[in-house]
Amino acid sequence: MGGTDTARARIYLMSKTKKPDPLEPRHLDLSNAVRGKYYDRMKAGTNIVLIAPDLLDTFPDSESVNEALRGLKKIAARSVRPEPRPRRTASAAN
Image (cartoon, rainbow, N blue to C red; front, side):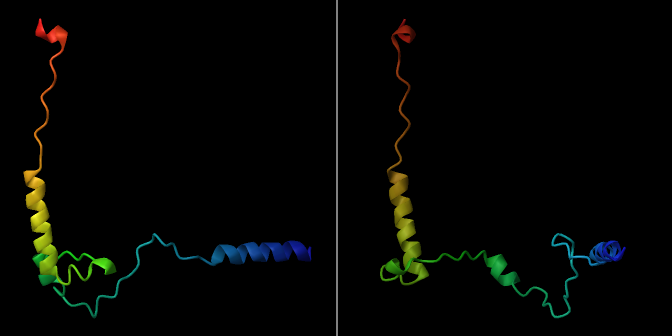
């Protein structure tokens, strides 16, 4: 009977120890929070882009990147081809 009691005690203890649910809402300590700390950054709409190390010589700062992108945008706008007109088939000509 000692083995059965041990097994029951183990099951009882396992049911009492509750693991925290990772999806359960947790209390947030906002006592040290600063209201509007990142408001100016968010309002400015800053986007951060990481430049690959091999491009740092060509684009040392954000202005050089912006200048290159503006030039690329102009080239792309000029090179847009109009969509070709649909071909007329023999049955459509009649």
